[in-house]
Image 1 (cartoon, rainbow, N blue to C red):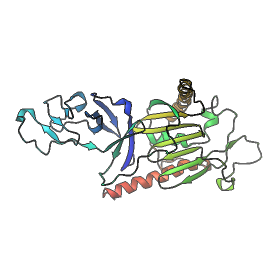
Image 2: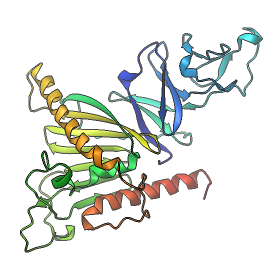
Image 3: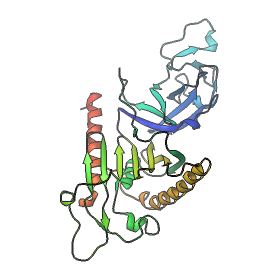
Length: 330
């Protein structure tokens, strides 16, 4: 995982008012709750007093109460009350719960996973995904490292095999390019698959004409992907790390070619069901990959059509190394 990044960890609707939610994210047990104004707090699910999970406690106004001895912690993580010491007693400074910087946008809860900053970077998002679209959401859990699942969605030439009965129909096995544009935090990919005529090999990206349409796929680090199917149809996914061997995907389908009330929502739901079928075709293969976690030097023999994956791994490693340097580890 890449430190010093914003990560989507939950959908907003998963943390309801007056409810405490405990989940494993980024390999860490975390607890989420809303204060009286509806603002979300994310903290370590661990009382520093005796190690009990705060997620099995309760809310006391704008504080979370440990179920063991009634210690209360505010949104900053500070302990505000130790019942055994009395209401007027000062609380020890050491009684402090690790608290994560949290933002809530676009129906998702983001946390900053890394070192605290004076000023935080923008949240990862695609600005052209706006309120003009009707959406449908889906959540899926896979027993695979998030990096492997991301790479599957950047892979443009597995379609005729994994998806031979759906989006890969037509046996277009030759992958020209793909054209891949990169910067320090994103990838843009143009897909060009065709039938094998038995006479020519795949063309290199440099030999392909300049694309006449916007990208097919875009990825923003650390874990946001979008398939731009058309101007009026998109799919986005946040690939949320649970731990090194498990991932939760937050998928959202967008459509605006149907605008009739009720019908537009039904269309979004139906096409989202088709997306679930596609994901399940991927799942049976991706969960078998070894090693479980990707990287630049893991013994795989890659080919030109793997260019998006190579670029992803290269940028990912640079970001990981940069985060280590910022922590003074190298």
